[in-house]
Amino acid sequence: MKEFRKLYPGIDFELHTGDYSKIEQWIAEGLVDFGFLIRPVRTDYDTIDIMTDEMLAVLPEKHPMTEKTEIPLKAFEDESVVLLQEGGKQEIEEHFKKNKIAPHISYYSGDDYAVMSMVENELGIGILSELVMKRCDYHIVTRSLKPELHREIVIAVKNEKNASVAVKKFLQFVRKRENP
Image 1 (tube, rainbow, N blue to C red):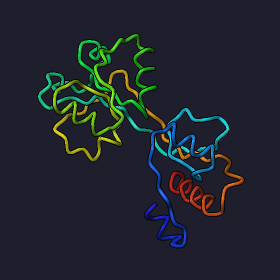
Image 2: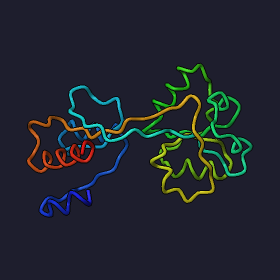
Image 3: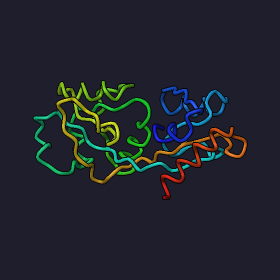
Image 4: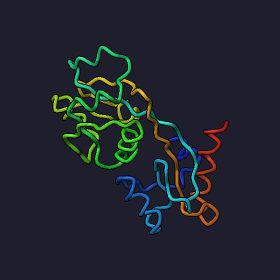
């Protein structure tokens, strides 16, 4: 957005934050012009792929599994697990189900940072996205999952053809950055 604002200083953004279901609803109701979502999204939305984000195991610093480079999903059956309530819960639980894993979920939280704090305080292990973990100041460790789990981040707009000129310019800018 910073680079876009340099090119188009007359176009302002009004940012709203919420979980993915709220953002999807806001798009549908026309309360926002577009949103950042994770696949799957409504099939009637136009989307632009932004990035693939790896989901990571999150462990307390002194946890015995920090010695491993990958954490097997099976390990989540024997550990207390802290999961994010919104945003990634469906993919994570579907990943467990697909791999015939019955995790021992002890806590759900609606906030990434609460999950990090709970893991730091040794209330369990968790799964969070690599993107969220990039600015982590907690005393926790991340490891890849085995098998891996990724999420696809997209920009979604209700109807790109009918979008405002400003939105079209932003989407065009994003596409050029993704495909230079």
